Amino acid sequence: MPIVRAEELTYTKVRALDMNRTVYFQPVSALEVHGPHLPLGMDFYMARWMAEETGRRFTEKRSQWTAVQLPPLPLGTDELPLAGSMSTNQRTVYNAVRSHGRSLARAGCKYVVVTNGHGGPRHAAALEAACRITSKKYGIQMFTPSIAVLHAIITGQRFEAVEAVLGRPLGERERANLGLGVEHAGGWETSFMLAQNSDLVESGYESLEYDEPPQAPWIGAIGDRIAALRGAEKAAETRQIFHAAAGGIGWLLNAHYGYGGKTVTYEGTPAVASAELGHAFRHVMAEDCLALLEAVVEGRKDAKEVRSIASDPAPIQPGFWPRVAAVAALVALLLV
Image (cartoon, rainbow, N blue to C red):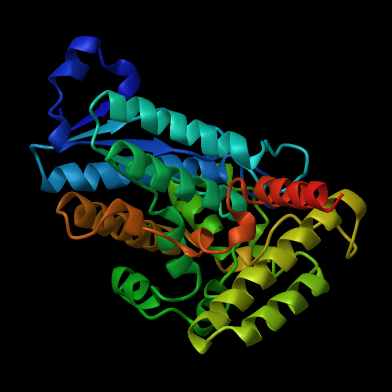
């Protein structure tokens, strides 16, 4: 049974699995508005494809292993608040993934890969935190490679790998618009869906040039001040995180109150997209996920070491603000 769907297994088949050679894949992404041209299920499709393709490549190389594909969890937080997006709070995402991990651990599972197509900072932080705490508490190897892999691609760190698959160098316009460090229904995601199912991409995406949400400038200014206090190694990462947050908050204000003018539904440049880029993008993404999975099952990397920039900033971690509120309340009581 190299690849199976969890919902099709009987109890007898579950008990027959060799858990030392079984990997469970759990996609987690919700529906969200992705520009005027991509389907609401963009992140959902990506998370599910990432699980299925990584599992297929893994078992092709290891015929004695089994990949169990769990049904996707349609959950997400930090979704763009426009009609069609389905969002829940961060704690719900965190608790759901922890609960699934606990159930799998109690069933004897040793390896769990959580895949995700949504780059919302608190969503990614919830998944990574849930995987870390579950791995630590139950002694399993549960991790989510998605944001670490996707971040490397959208920041231009994997251009050479993409070019190797394409068999040609990226053009100047492609390079200028695909390594921006931000992506929401832009060139990469539009390319992914053109390769996945072009019928789901509305015509006219070729005319969609660069757009971005309005910034909340005070957030970026705070980030610049904090970055100045940190070492050079962390300064760039700090600025990136805070400027991303500035865009995210600006996007919320734009969607709810019209801040910055017209309603913004995408970030990036859909016009540079192509199915050719999509196939190359998907190959690199799957290979990078596969490399992390192989490192974990071979013992070269611990699951808790698979992290992205979403694991670092304290304010976006699950439970941070309730703890701050509790401490503030305690201090207030002591001062009364």
